[in-house]
Length: 345
Figure 1: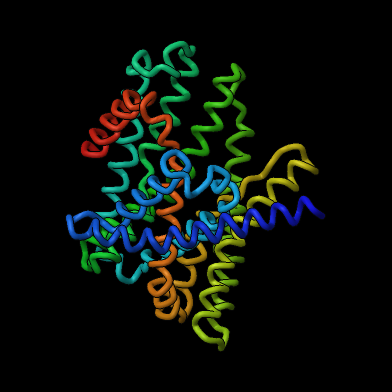
Figure 2: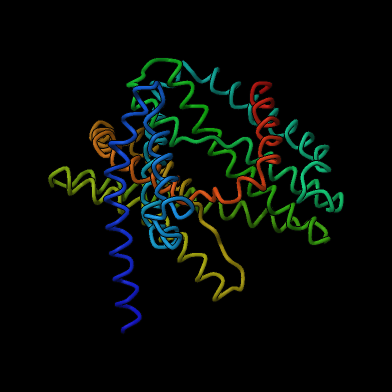
Protein backbone atom coordinates (compact mmCIF):
# COMPACT_ATOMS: atom_id res chain seq x y z
CA UNK A 1 0.00 0.00 0.00
CA UNK A 2 2.83 2.39 0.94
CA UNK A 3 4.66 1.54 -2.28
CA UNK A 4 1.52 2.30 -4.32
CA UNK A 5 1.03 5.65 -2.54
CA UNK A 6 4.70 6.53 -3.04
CA UNK A 7 4.50 5.73 -6.76
CA UNK A 8 1.24 7.66 -7.08
CA UNK A 9 2.76 10.68 -5.31
CA UNK A 10 5.83 10.57 -7.56
CA UNK A 11 3.61 10.46 -10.65
CA UNK A 12 1.62 13.49 -9.46
CA UNK A 13 4.82 15.45 -8.80
CA UNK A 14 6.39 14.57 -12.15
CA UNK A 15 3.16 15.28 -14.02
CA UNK A 16 2.65 18.64 -12.27
CA UNK A 17 6.22 19.67 -13.01
CA UNK A 18 5.90 18.62 -16.63
CA UNK A 19 2.65 20.57 -17.13
CA UNK A 20 4.28 23.74 -15.76
CA UNK A 21 7.26 23.28 -18.08
CA UNK A 22 4.93 22.60 -21.03
CA UNK A 23 3.15 25.92 -20.39
CA UNK A 24 6.51 27.71 -20.30
CA UNK A 25 7.60 25.77 -23.39
CA UNK A 26 4.69 27.20 -25.36
CA UNK A 27 5.72 30.77 -24.48
CA UNK A 28 9.41 30.17 -25.22
CA UNK A 29 8.59 28.47 -28.53
CA UNK A 30 6.78 31.57 -29.77
CA UNK A 31 10.12 33.42 -29.81
CA UNK A 32 11.36 30.86 -32.35
CA UNK A 33 8.64 31.98 -34.75
CA UNK A 34 10.22 35.44 -34.77
CA UNK A 35 13.34 33.96 -36.37
CA UNK A 36 11.29 32.02 -38.94
CA UNK A 37 11.51 28.63 -37.22
CA UNK A 38 8.48 26.38 -36.60
CA UNK A 39 6.85 26.37 -33.19
CA UNK A 40 7.75 22.70 -32.73
CA UNK A 41 11.47 23.57 -32.92
CA UNK A 42 11.06 25.76 -29.85
CA UNK A 43 9.04 23.09 -28.04
CA UNK A 44 11.69 20.42 -28.63
CA UNK A 45 14.47 22.86 -27.68
CA UNK A 46 12.73 23.76 -24.40
CA UNK A 47 12.22 20.06 -23.65
CA UNK A 48 15.93 19.37 -24.22
CA UNK A 49 17.00 22.25 -21.96
CA UNK A 50 14.54 21.16 -19.24
CA UNK A 51 15.48 17.50 -19.55
CA UNK A 52 17.65 15.36 -17.27
CA UNK A 53 20.87 15.96 -19.22
CA UNK A 54 20.98 19.78 -18.90
CA UNK A 55 18.92 21.60 -16.24
CA UNK A 56 17.19 18.49 -14.91
CA UNK A 57 13.76 20.02 -14.29
CA UNK A 58 12.27 16.94 -15.92
CA UNK A 59 13.87 13.85 -14.28
CA UNK A 60 15.02 10.82 -16.23
CA UNK A 61 12.18 8.79 -14.66
CA UNK A 62 9.71 10.99 -16.53
CA UNK A 63 10.20 8.90 -19.67
CA UNK A 64 8.42 5.99 -17.98
CA UNK A 65 6.09 7.94 -15.69
CA UNK A 66 4.79 10.15 -18.49
CA UNK A 67 4.66 7.50 -21.20
CA UNK A 68 0.88 7.68 -21.14
CA UNK A 69 1.07 11.33 -22.30
CA UNK A 70 3.20 10.24 -25.23
CA UNK A 71 0.72 7.49 -26.12
CA UNK A 72 -2.32 9.78 -25.90
CA UNK A 73 -0.52 12.31 -28.12
CA UNK A 74 0.58 9.69 -30.66
CA UNK A 75 -2.95 8.31 -30.93
CA UNK A 76 -4.28 11.84 -31.42
CA UNK A 77 -1.68 12.50 -34.13
CA UNK A 78 -2.70 9.24 -35.83
CA UNK A 79 -6.33 10.46 -35.73
CA UNK A 80 -5.24 13.74 -37.33
CA UNK A 81 -3.27 11.84 -39.99
CA UNK A 82 -6.20 9.55 -40.80
CA UNK A 83 -8.52 12.56 -41.08
CA UNK A 84 -6.33 13.88 -43.90
CA UNK A 85 -7.24 10.83 -46.01
CA UNK A 86 -10.58 12.16 -47.19
CA UNK A 87 -11.13 10.22 -50.39
CA UNK A 88 -13.37 12.78 -52.10
CA UNK A 89 -10.67 15.45 -51.84
CA UNK A 90 -7.75 13.15 -52.61
CA UNK A 91 -9.25 11.54 -55.72
CA UNK A 92 -7.64 14.11 -58.02
CA UNK A 93 -4.28 13.64 -56.26
CA UNK A 94 -4.20 9.81 -56.38
CA UNK A 95 -1.70 9.63 -59.23
CA UNK A 96 0.78 12.02 -57.57
CA UNK A 97 0.39 10.29 -54.20
CA UNK A 98 0.85 6.85 -55.79
CA UNK A 99 4.09 7.68 -57.64
CA UNK A 100 5.60 9.76 -54.82
CA UNK A 101 4.86 6.97 -52.37
CA UNK A 102 6.23 4.28 -54.70
CA UNK A 103 9.39 6.26 -55.49
CA UNK A 104 10.22 7.09 -51.89
CA UNK A 105 9.26 3.69 -50.52
CA UNK A 106 11.13 1.57 -53.08
CA UNK A 107 14.10 3.79 -53.94
CA UNK A 108 14.77 4.94 -50.37
CA UNK A 109 14.54 1.39 -49.06
CA UNK A 110 16.55 -0.40 -51.78
CA UNK A 111 19.30 2.21 -52.25
CA UNK A 112 19.39 2.91 -48.51
CA UNK A 113 19.87 -0.80 -47.71
CA UNK A 114 22.74 -1.08 -50.20
CA UNK A 115 24.40 2.15 -49.01
CA UNK A 116 24.23 1.22 -45.32
CA UNK A 117 25.61 -2.27 -46.07
CA UNK A 118 28.63 -0.89 -47.94
CA UNK A 119 29.20 1.76 -45.23
CA UNK A 120 29.17 -0.89 -42.49
CA UNK A 121 32.96 -0.68 -41.97
CA UNK A 122 32.56 2.99 -41.01
CA UNK A 123 29.73 2.30 -38.55
CA UNK A 124 31.21 1.05 -35.24
CA UNK A 125 28.33 -1.21 -34.18
CA UNK A 126 28.26 -2.93 -37.61
CA UNK A 127 31.99 -3.26 -38.24
CA UNK A 128 32.47 -6.64 -36.53
CA UNK A 129 29.15 -8.17 -37.60
CA UNK A 130 28.77 -11.15 -39.89
CA UNK A 131 27.56 -10.55 -43.46
CA UNK A 132 24.08 -11.85 -42.59
CA UNK A 133 23.85 -9.50 -39.61
CA UNK A 134 25.04 -6.55 -41.71
CA UNK A 135 22.33 -7.26 -44.30
CA UNK A 136 19.71 -7.48 -41.53
CA UNK A 137 20.75 -4.23 -39.86
CA UNK A 138 21.02 -2.47 -43.23
CA UNK A 139 17.47 -3.41 -44.27
CA UNK A 140 16.00 -2.51 -40.87
CA UNK A 141 17.82 0.85 -40.96
CA UNK A 142 16.58 1.51 -44.51
CA UNK A 143 13.02 0.72 -43.42
CA UNK A 144 13.40 3.41 -40.74
CA UNK A 145 14.71 5.79 -43.44
CA UNK A 146 11.38 5.44 -45.25
CA UNK A 147 9.34 6.54 -42.23
CA UNK A 148 8.18 10.14 -42.01
CA UNK A 149 6.71 12.17 -39.19
CA UNK A 150 2.99 12.91 -39.60
CA UNK A 151 3.21 14.76 -36.26
CA UNK A 152 5.76 17.29 -37.55
CA UNK A 153 4.05 17.67 -40.92
CA UNK A 154 0.59 18.22 -39.43
CA UNK A 155 1.94 20.60 -36.76
CA UNK A 156 3.71 22.81 -39.32
CA UNK A 157 0.75 22.72 -41.73
CA UNK A 158 -1.63 23.71 -38.94
CA UNK A 159 0.72 26.47 -37.77
CA UNK A 160 0.93 27.97 -41.28
CA UNK A 161 -2.75 27.26 -42.03
CA UNK A 162 -1.59 25.76 -45.32
CA UNK A 163 -4.18 24.45 -47.77
CA UNK A 164 -4.30 23.27 -51.37
CA UNK A 165 -3.25 20.42 -53.68
CA UNK A 166 0.40 20.46 -52.62
CA UNK A 167 -0.54 20.06 -48.95
CA UNK A 168 -3.01 17.29 -49.84
CA UNK A 169 -0.29 15.46 -51.78
CA UNK A 170 2.26 15.87 -48.96
CA UNK A 171 -0.13 14.59 -46.33
CA UNK A 172 -1.40 11.78 -48.55
CA UNK A 173 2.15 10.55 -49.22
CA UNK A 174 3.18 10.96 -45.57
CA UNK A 175 0.25 9.01 -44.17
CA UNK A 176 0.13 6.27 -46.83
CA UNK A 177 3.89 5.74 -46.58
CA UNK A 178 3.75 5.55 -42.78
CA UNK A 179 0.98 2.98 -43.13
CA UNK A 180 3.13 0.90 -45.52
CA UNK A 181 6.35 1.31 -43.55
CA UNK A 182 4.76 -0.39 -40.54
CA UNK A 183 4.33 -3.49 -42.72
CA UNK A 184 7.80 -3.14 -44.27
CA UNK A 185 9.52 -2.72 -40.91
CA UNK A 186 7.68 -5.70 -39.40
CA UNK A 187 8.83 -7.95 -42.25
CA UNK A 188 12.43 -6.66 -42.13
CA UNK A 189 12.57 -7.17 -38.37
CA UNK A 190 11.24 -10.74 -38.57
CA UNK A 191 13.67 -11.68 -41.36
CA UNK A 192 16.54 -9.87 -39.64
CA UNK A 193 16.03 -11.63 -36.31
CA UNK A 194 16.16 -15.00 -38.07
CA UNK A 195 19.32 -14.10 -39.99
CA UNK A 196 21.13 -12.70 -36.95
CA UNK A 197 20.21 -15.80 -34.92
CA UNK A 198 21.58 -17.95 -37.76
CA UNK A 199 18.24 -19.68 -38.24
CA UNK A 200 16.47 -20.50 -41.49
CA UNK A 201 13.74 -18.00 -42.15
CA UNK A 202 10.39 -19.47 -41.27
CA UNK A 203 7.41 -18.69 -43.50
CA UNK A 204 5.42 -18.83 -40.28
CA UNK A 205 7.02 -15.50 -39.30
CA UNK A 206 5.40 -13.79 -42.28
CA UNK A 207 2.08 -15.48 -41.47
CA UNK A 208 2.41 -14.21 -37.90
CA UNK A 209 2.97 -10.64 -39.17
CA UNK A 210 0.02 -10.88 -41.56
CA UNK A 211 -2.23 -12.09 -38.72
CA UNK A 212 -1.09 -9.19 -36.50
CA UNK A 213 -1.70 -6.65 -39.27
CA UNK A 214 -5.09 -8.19 -40.12
CA UNK A 215 -6.15 -8.04 -36.47
CA UNK A 216 -4.92 -4.44 -36.24
CA UNK A 217 -6.96 -3.60 -39.34
CA UNK A 218 -10.11 -5.26 -37.96
CA UNK A 219 -9.82 -3.63 -34.54
CA UNK A 220 -8.93 -0.24 -36.02
CA UNK A 221 -11.57 -0.04 -38.74
CA UNK A 222 -14.44 -1.95 -37.17
CA UNK A 223 -13.96 -1.61 -33.39
CA UNK A 224 -12.23 1.73 -32.74
CA UNK A 225 -13.91 3.25 -35.80
CA UNK A 226 -17.31 2.33 -34.35
CA UNK A 227 -16.25 3.58 -30.91
CA UNK A 228 -15.30 6.95 -32.38
CA UNK A 229 -18.57 7.08 -34.27
CA UNK A 230 -20.48 6.33 -31.05
CA UNK A 231 -18.60 9.03 -29.10
CA UNK A 232 -19.23 11.62 -31.82
CA UNK A 233 -22.94 10.74 -31.87
CA UNK A 234 -23.37 11.54 -28.17
CA UNK A 235 -25.31 14.69 -27.29
CA UNK A 236 -22.76 16.14 -24.87
CA UNK A 237 -20.62 19.29 -24.78
CA UNK A 238 -17.44 19.39 -26.89
CA UNK A 239 -14.94 19.17 -23.99
CA UNK A 240 -16.61 15.94 -22.90
CA UNK A 241 -16.41 14.52 -26.44
CA UNK A 242 -12.78 15.60 -26.68
CA UNK A 243 -11.88 13.67 -23.54
CA UNK A 244 -13.69 10.59 -24.83
CA UNK A 245 -12.01 10.86 -28.27
CA UNK A 246 -8.60 11.02 -26.57
CA UNK A 247 -9.52 8.03 -24.41
CA UNK A 248 -10.53 6.00 -27.48
CA UNK A 249 -7.10 6.72 -28.95
CA UNK A 250 -5.32 5.83 -25.71
CA UNK A 251 -7.39 2.62 -25.57
CA UNK A 252 -5.62 1.40 -28.71
CA UNK A 253 -2.38 1.39 -26.70
CA UNK A 254 -4.06 -0.26 -23.71
CA UNK A 255 -5.40 -2.98 -26.01
CA UNK A 256 -1.99 -3.45 -27.65
CA UNK A 257 -0.22 -3.85 -24.28
CA UNK A 258 -2.89 -6.17 -22.88
CA UNK A 259 -3.01 -8.36 -26.00
CA UNK A 260 0.75 -8.82 -25.95
CA UNK A 261 0.87 -9.67 -22.23
CA UNK A 262 -2.05 -12.12 -22.43
CA UNK A 263 -0.79 -13.93 -25.53
CA UNK A 264 2.68 -14.30 -23.99
CA UNK A 265 1.12 -15.67 -20.80
CA UNK A 266 -1.18 -18.19 -22.48
CA UNK A 267 0.62 -19.00 -25.75
CA UNK A 268 4.26 -18.14 -24.97
CA UNK A 269 4.27 -15.91 -28.05
CA UNK A 270 3.17 -12.29 -28.07
CA UNK A 271 0.68 -10.86 -30.57
CA UNK A 272 1.45 -7.21 -31.26
CA UNK A 273 -1.45 -5.04 -32.37
CA UNK A 274 -0.17 -1.80 -33.92
CA UNK A 275 -1.89 1.10 -32.06
CA UNK A 276 -0.93 3.79 -34.60
CA UNK A 277 -2.34 1.71 -37.44
CA UNK A 278 -5.56 1.11 -35.51
CA UNK A 279 -5.92 4.82 -34.76
CA UNK A 280 -5.30 5.86 -38.39
CA UNK A 281 -7.90 3.35 -39.62
CA UNK A 282 -10.45 4.44 -37.00
CA UNK A 283 -10.04 8.05 -38.08
CA UNK A 284 -10.20 7.06 -41.76
CA UNK A 285 -13.50 5.25 -41.09
CA UNK A 286 -15.07 8.25 -39.34
CA UNK A 287 -13.79 10.67 -42.00
CA UNK A 288 -15.05 8.73 -45.00
CA UNK A 289 -17.96 6.56 -43.85
CA UNK A 290 -19.86 8.58 -41.26
CA UNK A 291 -21.64 11.93 -41.11
CA UNK A 292 -19.40 13.15 -38.27
CA UNK A 293 -16.34 14.22 -40.29
CA UNK A 294 -16.86 17.97 -39.75
CA UNK A 295 -17.35 17.61 -35.99
CA UNK A 296 -14.40 15.22 -35.71
CA UNK A 297 -12.08 17.65 -37.54
CA UNK A 298 -13.37 20.50 -35.38
CA UNK A 299 -12.42 18.56 -32.23
CA UNK A 300 -8.99 17.74 -33.66
CA UNK A 301 -8.29 21.36 -34.59
CA UNK A 302 -9.30 22.71 -31.19
CA UNK A 303 -7.29 20.08 -29.32
CA UNK A 304 -4.17 20.13 -31.51
CA UNK A 305 -2.20 22.91 -29.78
CA UNK A 306 -2.08 21.48 -26.22
CA UNK A 307 -1.40 17.99 -27.61
CA UNK A 308 1.53 19.20 -29.74
CA UNK A 309 2.94 21.25 -26.85
CA UNK A 310 2.91 18.19 -24.56
CA UNK A 311 4.20 15.79 -27.25
CA UNK A 312 7.13 17.82 -28.57
CA UNK A 313 8.19 19.04 -25.11
CA UNK A 314 8.16 15.40 -23.93
CA UNK A 315 10.09 14.38 -27.06
CA UNK A 316 12.81 16.95 -26.36
CA UNK A 317 13.00 16.05 -22.67
CA UNK A 318 13.47 12.34 -23.37
CA UNK A 319 16.12 12.70 -26.09
CA UNK A 320 19.35 10.98 -25.06
CA UNK A 321 21.52 13.97 -25.90
CA UNK A 322 24.22 12.66 -23.54
CA UNK A 323 25.27 10.19 -26.25
CA UNK A 324 25.40 12.68 -29.13
CA UNK A 325 29.16 13.12 -28.85
CA UNK A 326 29.82 9.40 -29.26
CA UNK A 327 27.40 8.84 -32.16
CA UNK A 328 27.59 12.09 -34.15
CA UNK A 329 29.81 10.53 -36.83
CA UNK A 330 27.42 7.64 -37.45
CA UNK A 331 24.45 10.00 -37.30
CA UNK A 332 25.92 12.19 -40.04
CA UNK A 333 26.63 9.16 -42.26
CA UNK A 334 23.06 7.87 -41.86
CA UNK A 335 21.62 11.36 -42.29
CA UNK A 336 23.52 11.81 -45.56
CA UNK A 337 22.37 8.43 -46.90
CA UNK A 338 18.77 9.15 -45.93
CA UNK A 339 18.60 12.64 -47.45
CA UNK A 340 20.21 11.49 -50.72
CA UNK A 341 17.88 8.48 -51.08
CA UNK A 342 14.87 10.67 -50.25
CA UNK A 343 15.79 13.09 -53.05
CA UNK A 344 16.34 10.19 -55.45
CA UNK A 345 12.97 8.72 -54.48
